[in-house]
Length: 107
Image (cartoon, rainbow, N blue to C red; front, top):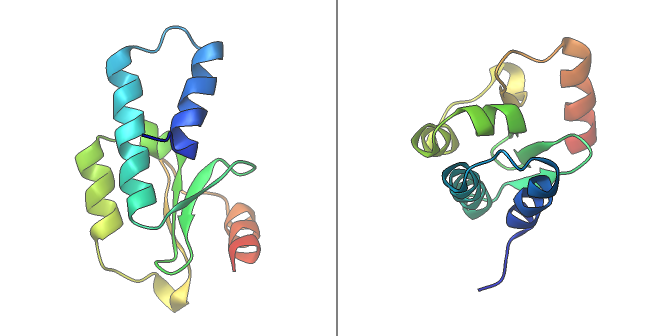
């Protein structure tokens, strides 16, 4: 089986962080599969997963801190942001300037 981009990211992170346990690594890979399976793409520069069609953005901190069931629930939930803006799944809301930059970059 070919490794996904997210799996390569996790493997690269291991080179810098030897304290991660195998269970944590598997959880991150599982979450990456959930997101990629739902059409999300990873942005290296911003360290976010995004889906233009769903207009949703997940920060890596949010992904790492939540369990796979929460990630899947957020991916599947059907709701729209006010005024057709993007929905941000971050641990704390991003600053308005960050929101505007991400929305401009991602369309």
